[in-house]
Amino acid sequence: MNSQTLRVAPNPVWIIANKELKDSLRNRWVSVITFIFMLLSFSVTFAGSAISAELALPNLPSLITSLSTMTVFIIPLAAILLSYDAYIGEEEAGTMLLLLSYPLTKQQIFIGKLVAHSGIMLAAISLAFGCSAVAMLLWSEASSAAVISAFFQFIVSSSLLAVTFILISYLVSLHVSEKAKAVGTLLSLWFLLVLVYDLLLLALLVADLGSSSQALVNVLMALNPTDIYRAINLLAVDSPMGSLSLLADTAWGIELLYGLSIAWVACLAMLASQSFARKSI
Amino acid sequence: MHIEDLAVSLQAVSHQFGDFAALTEVDCALQPGQLLALLGHNGAGKSTLLKVILGLIDPSHGQVTVLGQRLSAHNRKPMNIGYLPENISFYDKLTGHELLSYFAALKGVGQVRVNRLIEEFGLQYAQHKPLKGYSKGMKQRLGIAQAILAEPQLLLLDEPTVGLDPQASEFLYQKIQSLTQLGCAVMVSTHELNLIEPQLDVAMVMGQGRNLATGPMDSLVKQSQLPVTIRFDDMIRRVTRYNHLAAFYHNGALRCPVAETESLVEYLTTQCHIFDFEIEKPGLSALYQELMAPMQQNDEQGIVFQPVNQTVLVGA
Ligand SMILES: Nc1ncnc2c1ncn2[C@@H]1O[C@H](COP(=O)(O)OP(=O)(O)OP(=O)(O)O)[C@@H](O)[C@H]1O
Ligand SMILES: [Mg+2]
Image 1 (cartoon, rainbow over the protein chains, first blue to last red):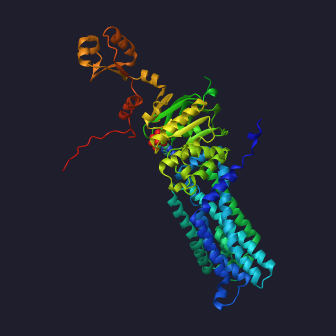
Image 2: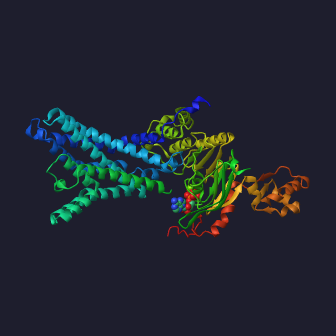
């Protein structure tokens, strides 16, 4: 056999991920998102200094808590804007039909997209909040070990939240008939999960604080990935603040909450890849 | 020829979308090196048929064999097929060069070929600009370049000349010819009959999901009821002189069934000593019109174009 024909072809997953990366990085949203993350990270970290006109960093628990009360809104929104057209966009452009005629599996297309979109979110999150971490390492009283472990878990849980919403966007993107509908559906879903759901949960807590309702609240919380995220970040720093601080003394430890978060990602990934596999042309 | 040796073989292929029959008992056989023109009204099932051949649609009934492989939902081995879907618009943010490189990478084709095709399709000047700024025809050229990247064994083009300028269309058919000479089988779905007529080996005309006729032009013309037209100078005087000719005279020319052409020509030359005549065989367009005529009477879905008689009130 001719040695030239033995050239090792790169894995299609990487080719697709690479293209998605290129495509997304040219998307205005991605730079806007990263910029907003940075802005958020800096303003929360240095807000105290600006007021007192000297370098005064907040303590670690309150920094993480303040950050997470904001990121719980902004990360899902960013993930949605990044990936709402992942499937419906290609369908509208006619490129999905073309890709499926290539020697590729749907699984490879799915994984390629997921790798690229998750990678972008992970990079934006790490970059923006890594800066806060560096500032804390340099100028705060907290021990390096405490700062590193707090930010590590913050970045991990934030990334899990991002991947969850990327997968939710895929599911919607696979089921709608036009891009505009994907955006509309996802923004409503975002509003519901991030705002309305917690208001209802709070109402329930205020109305009745019996032990049976505490168990119900725990279950309801597990059903909303943004609440799991909030709980993880409240528990992780042992903070008594935040609207869901009532949950801080739930029976659920942080490991279980991470487990739930990963279970969400796994279930959504299964669901989305199955819907893609079953989708007819 | 064995089914395994054909590029495409469809046997009684039917497909339903819900309870709508998009394809009904379609048969087709395409040999390597042939160009098949896939014709038919809007909604006839041309694009659906191409998707069935690509294995993108699993037909409800029938047997599909492509490049010697029987297609089924479970059996989709990679094959060297080039495809251009209709109305493709690609990714706005990539440049032309990046787009073609992307598809080349997926097909395991090198950069040399990408650059060559960009040059051949006259896209060098725009290759590093985002596709957002490409015209319809420029995108179409890229789409065609994409389809022939890997020098396919089977090439399926769905309305490739839409948006192309005349030179680009001509170049496309040249390109197709050089591929067929290498043994590539090509199917082109198109409404531009005059462009494909001089190029095609086989025409396949579809109507309402059925295959109305397939074959080389000559045999389709023979099967049809369409007359051959013969013209010569000073016609009326000559026709009145030879009684036998009068039977064929209609509307300023002699018109006779294809089967009788030979004997009529012989009569013209030997009996009437007329040598300066022109013979015009029915073209693809006439053939198409004839095949579509029954469709209009039997058109439950209102798919086939029917002019509506309207009274136009001028200055009312
Ligand atoms: N996914 C689908 N679901 C339901 N009906 C469909 C689907 N795809 C095609 N059809 C129907 O099948 C018929 C054939 O469509 P097809 O696209 O194959 O036509 P066509 O011959 O390519 O037409 P055109 O010349 O307009 O491109 C049409 O009536 C169309 O409405
Ligand atoms: Mg079509």
